[in-house]
Image 1 (cartoon, rainbow, N blue to C red):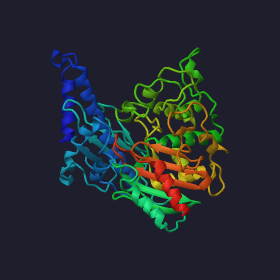
Image 2: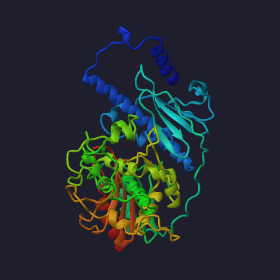
Image 3: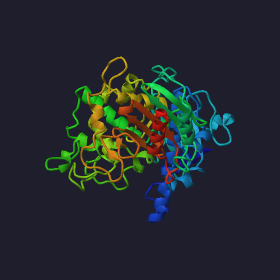
Image 4: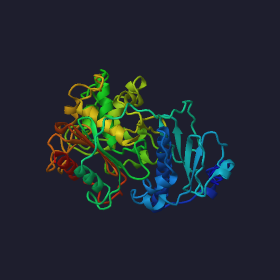
Length: 479
């Protein structure tokens, strides 16, 4: 069983000193990369099984391992996609014996432990001489991936609470035939030949006009936001600004001393992807943090400059992480969970690294309905339905203004949000939260409209043409 594998390896390493000639071995760079890829694939699998299942159960919904394997764990980045499918796993729940073996009589053939109790952690084997990769669930806070080689299962004293209530449903109205047609096309190949839509929600004037889900999903089933979390991060920065805890012109807290030009990087630079810092891969790839079990503090903070702050645009997870780091002291009294509750996003969880650092560049789990509430908050410029302001006046205008350097192409960039006004048939004021595998929240103030599309599109595939879909939705509502 999986537990025997890593306990035996641990005992052996303790019995023989690491300096023993019997352990000496040379490893080529190719072999090192292959081993690292397996470790990342195992971490990816452990984290997604843990988060998808535990966060759905928090909402009173259900996800099975088979469903997660079908959707979240297929079509992922190379070379992990070829590795992840065959890695053995076990899901361990509170209330069971401490070993998976003790629960073997209630385990299915694929290792999924059937139990009514909540997920404690998920283990995934990847090497015979190393412990399994492990993602640990903290009730109310989602799952955190542990470092490669860790065998420690942290336990939380928090009580588990299923969030079955919401802030109250939005009013709804029957969809027109034209809108139903556009939504149906979104679940086919019209907007991307290999796209895989999981949810569509269209809302105008605060009324839901259409809401559709793929099999295995529904109103209470969350998905990972990927980089939609960057727009959520910008919102949490806005909440801190509204409380008087920060200004977007404040330093982001980078640099190591007098004379370090990184000290000139502001929160605004970080939100606008204009810090000027180097990153070793395309900015949407942060594998050591996302799948390797590294922490925000150790991985994202110390990159050097290649441009002066404010002089260049480069999409970078690390910039968003630093914007959040700059306001993190306020999280002691005002956590992201507190903000979600206030905004009525009760089915939303912001996950952290294993040391508690929020990974708000990607690792938020939420539902289509909560994202519709999120979009509506921006239509209302940060004011709740009861009149309470939770974002600064003008914050919608701030995040959707293309200030500073811009990306190439039709989409501009504001402060944590993409700008869609460059696309034909899309209003000039349209802006969007966008994430990997086809996550979109389109906000169109001039039409008082929010469009949510969730997906699990394959990496490197055709993608989903959100501008074309938004254009068709707008046309359908104008018929």
